[in-house]
Image 1 (tube, one colour):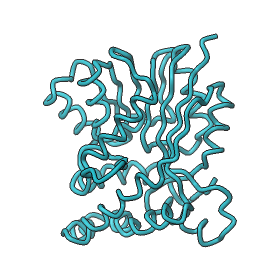
Image 2: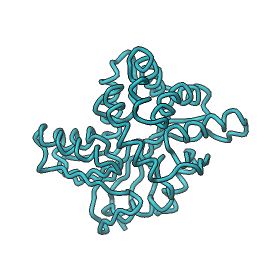
Image 3: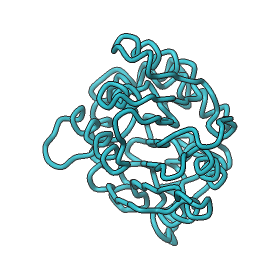
Length: 279
């Protein structure tokens, strides 16, 4: 695991309060990578990642879902509209909560979605509440990842599943340059740490969850950052970021860094699905 001790909780909250608009301008309603199989458009690729995770998690119509790190509500609203799920979305950002709630009303699913501005690490939920816990690119921002998965195991009903997409540290990282790349990504994208595939498996299993599916999508998602980098270069977004704060400028400037980390496999992009035993 690669750690960045300079990242603080307040920095993560501030990042999403200030940068949500930049995510929307550069990428769209889903604040997560695209998953490419061919020459799809970025919007199609982003939706494919959501749809693929939905299939792997075996989400069924009408199930209760907790979306940890729901962003602007893209995935939560999709699950509510397409599968009739009752979805609770959690975000640190009031901007994102308002955005998600407003969009849910506009899309006609306000009655089956609710969005909370809360810290996922202090979230209080009764045991055995959800059929599925879903998190796309949020666990990178958690300080105590093992405890999070212990909580997930409590929140899930017996037989329920947790489905995670996460930025991961590559294996080994004995090479100092590769380790520095991952550290620079953590610093620019306010991640207190990045765990490896083995770390995530271990955390899930220690929490009593049974890992049933893992996927390495590194090569299928890296194009996300080529597109975002090129959109920054063609637009006035970086100029706008300079009016916001220096941390937002650093975030934009690290797009090349994360792309290089994927290309060299200093970082991986992984999907993991685990089940809570029925007994």
